[in-house]
Image 1 (cartoon, rainbow, N blue to C red):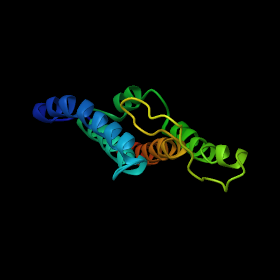
Image 2 (image 1 turned 180 degrees about the vertical axis):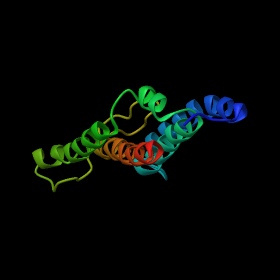
Image 3 (image 1 turned 135 degrees about the horizontal axis):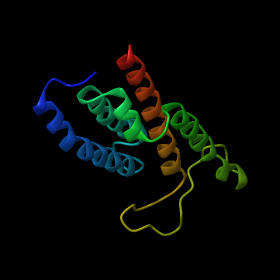
Length: 137
């Protein structure tokens, strides 16, 4: 499906990187404040959906560089893996553990951030799989 609107195509080219940057901001902010993997993933998926509607499904798939089903699998694996360090320390599964010193720009980094990254990838994969299938029909 090609866009008929030059304005929509140009606006998408400017909005796409801004939406992805905002989604990363939401992801990195979310483990300490409002936001997180789910909201950040929705914003990233919305950026790719916008690109899909402005241009074509194939161009959006090429821009993504990976099949959405792979993102779903990697996201699930990442989220599940985030609970293992707690088990190794003798704590219940998915108990939050943090590094002793804050990381510049990111702040406190720990297993909740790893869980959020997994959720982010999972949400992007699921939403884009749905969008791509519907757009191809």
